[in-house]
Structure formats: C-alpha cells, structure tokens
Length: 79
Image 1 (cartoon, rainbow, N blue to C red):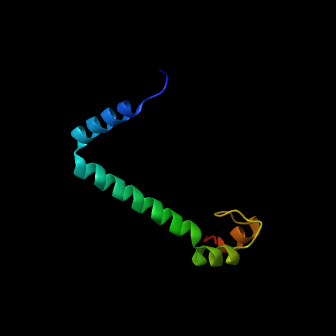
Image 2 (tube, rainbow, N blue to C red):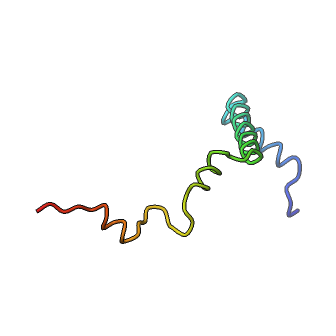
Image 3 (tube, rainbow, N blue to C red):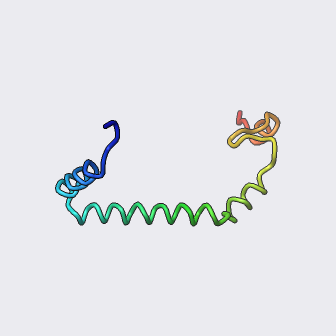
C-alpha cells in the first residue's frame, strides 16, 4: 500500500499528456537528450585551449592580484 503501482504512474502520465500535449513533452525529452549527449561529449574530450591557458599562467598567484612592486612600477604620478 505504501508504494505507487503501475496504475498510479499511468494516470499521472495521462494527466501530464493532457496538460502539456504530446508534442511539447516529446520536444522537451528530445532537448533533454541532446543536453545529456552534449554533456557526455564535452566530458570525454579534454579542452586543449583551457590546458594551454592553464600552463601559461604563473603558479602561486591568484587571478586579478598583483605584487606590490609591480603595481608601483606601472603607476606613474604627474606633478
């Protein structure tokens, strides 16, 4: 009695089809499948551009931070 039987699922599916229509549901499922395929494809292929960009960054620095000496060298004051 605690679980849902096949009849409960059939009625729920029928209500969903009546509310949204068959075309919208199948279109939504198709878009969902395309998203999953794209995700799997991107997870399987290593991104060469991100690997090259990561290798060119110096280690030990945070993005957007500068050392105080470099900041003083690049800043000029006009009197």
